Length: 432
Image (tube, rainbow, N blue to C red; front, side, top):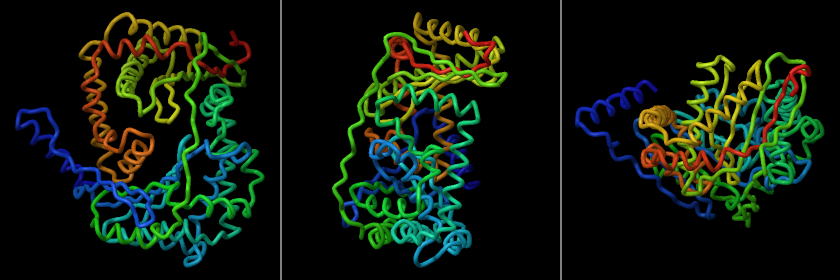
């Protein structure tokens, strides 16, 4: 990590010394297929001292049936506790012995991502350990129950924590009738009743070349990595998986805000509205516009008026995409009024060069930080690769933001954030 930081710092100095603002040539994203047709994305970064391998399960919520909320998440998490070759708990002990970080990331609406990260010397062990757990799981009852209870506890905490609950309740309204209404992370009800036999039956049916996408980032030997992947994941059946249809969200006729009372002092507000997806040419404009709006909301609602300690806006990354707004406040009426007032101010004028530059500076910094971690970069590359625009978007977003004009940002903010579907948690006496 220290080596990477020095490289980034040296890179920045070299660019400044040359008197130019363009970035040096990047490595190219390479796309190959294993012998069974499974697609693999490779991105070589010799300055990053680790190798990350990711397996993305396609489909997400859209391939789950009602009542299967969290089934894939539970199945994959339980599988990576022990294999037929390395039973529980030896499987995880093996990972620990070689410094291999195995992680099942919280599932997204469209996919589930599993990663293994290791130093270059043990990259082969990371690939084989990941494949061994997924392809030859032991299904130890004790390990399964431990994982099931962990996921169940998280689901229950989300219901109790108002900062999480406001999003859960908003999603119930915004996702109603949509494939995303199935929760990939599971509900307390579904996670309470899932059995070992259910996860044992689920996973093998979804381990096919057509349903997976693999990515590798960091310092690795290309031929060796492909050989390891072909020896393991390359032996999976081809399958015939096709992504289920995911319709775009419909826009309400006017702002629609639902209310719920809780015994809390601070109120929590969240809202969503339909927006361009990553495949849409307008996505970079929307991304820039929502970041500009987010900064302005912080400057006004939080810093200027002290009505919130947490407020932001943004654009999500989904096949059916949306923008979002959020704040927590002891004065929700005033905060919501100021939110709309700030938005309307941008609708009335183009942003200034300084406002745009702030967003560019922020995302340039975050891009460099992401590239200092093979695991973070891998997640971003696979996300954009699967959602449509291609992995290059993860590396090219700053340049695309530079090309967005102030007038385009203004036009986006006029068209999209209103009307929205919102949800507000507040005290009974504070209810409008």
